[in-house]
Image 1: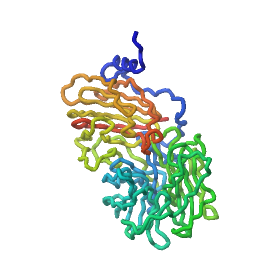
Image 2: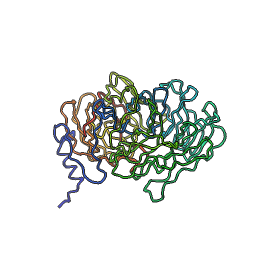
Image 3: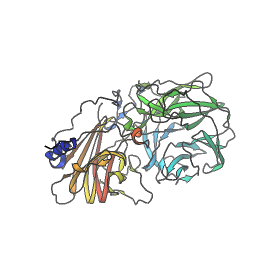
Image 4: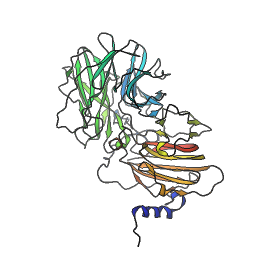
Amino acid sequence: MSTLTRRGAVRALASAAGAGFSVAATAAPRPAPQAGVGSPTRAPAFGIGREGQRKADLGNGTYRNPIVPGDRPDPTLLKDGSDYYLTFSSFTSYPGAVIWHSTDLVNWAPITAALRQPIGTVWAMDLIKHGGRYFIYIPAMQENGSTICVIHADNIRGPWSDPVDLRLPGCIDPGHAVGEDGKRYLFVNGVRRIRLSDDGLSTVGQLEPAYTPWQYPKDWVVEMFAPEGPKLLRRGEWFYLIAAVGGTSGPPTSHMVTLARSRSIHGPWEDCPHNPIVRTQSADEPWWSRGHASVVEGPAGDWWMVYHGYENGMRTLGRQTLLEPIEWTPDGWFKARGGTLARALPKPRGGKPSPAGFDLSDDFSQDRMGIQWSIFAPEAKDPPRVSLRDRSLVLKAKGSSLADCSPLTCLVGDRSYEASVELEIGGDAHGGLALFYDGRGFAGVGASAREMLTYNYGQEITWMRQPLPAQVGPRVMHLRLVNRENVVTFHTSPDGKDWTQHPWQMEVSGFHHNVFGGFLSLKLALFSAGQGEVRFRRFRYRGLPA
């Protein structure tokens, strides 16, 4: 008598379902709520923007965080007249260093991708303006260690220069400052400092200690000390040094914002008696590991702090950008006034209306590389793989599987959403639609000219391969993905009208940094592997209500 294993049972169900994984020709049902450790908290009421995407502006003079949803960590914020600009760590996604614009600090939209040339894994940057020119100081993790590069432009929309390597091994998290002596300095993790040349494109002298970071009590539950993210602000007679300690991930109570000040860029630095300025106190709060802040004056002279945090129970979305009001105290320090960010807050005063977000649905009639789409971990030697032809995106195959094919990825900021796409398989390629963290963590469905393919746990599930009916001409498939707070359902269709549900509903809440490392998020991905190319048409996206 044979023993029925779980795999055997699932295999039998898949086989019984027939080609195309048919379970039922139905619309995507909403799965039952999932219980247990790591379940997300109930979503608060957000504003509803384009395609049902959530937005911060509630339309009544208040906003609810995040101001830029999705994986936009390590925000660096520049005020330039009445305009504000943000950019974020872009890691291995290229084009990278996407710059966002706002006039009210709440509504943001991307305007350009400043970094086109792969230089490694891009971490926390600093976007500044000096002498009428814009600069981005960019830490890059490379095979032989880290360095800091700089790019510059006369117009923030570009064109931006090629990267210049400042040759600062072992340094990350740059923070630019101009001292009372008029000289330019770059502060880095540690907290250390080096002088810059007057043009900001090379260093002068040696790296040196600048400040002994504030130390939290030993019994606090944090990831690690990790002093990082120094950002400098000059206001009145004081230089303020805003930094982060505690580690950006790990326990929810790890990351925090600290403050010190000095009358000279050379120190000595005095720690704020109110440190930490911001810290998640409990895993019950809506935002975890809050830290890595920049401080800026608002449109009407009030003051604000922008930093990142993980959404409670939704680490798969990555670290999202948050906005909190601050208040200057009579003794020359400032305090955060947003509490846990659980409630809606009054918007900054005096800001002009500003566009928020952009449509993710794409008919591939225009180039949206960088603004929406990016290649995951391209190699500098790679030939161009993406082209637009007749309202379709053609992605040349690379590698042998989803794991090593450098897919085309798209950041999402909604807790629940639906995405679909049509694909046409060319040659001996295979491709599809997936949720992709990195080459070790992904889930999705795809097809070759002959078979349907299933992926989970960072691998192809080969025993779930299903033959497809013989077809004259290229294989065309329609794929749909529904992600409801990390429970994922796939559907397939030969024509985009009659859909059949894949038999395997996947739970993907573990696809995040605390499991895999890398500081990334779970992104939508279009992929093409093997030999040949995959042509994608009519990518559609919509956010789903909580």
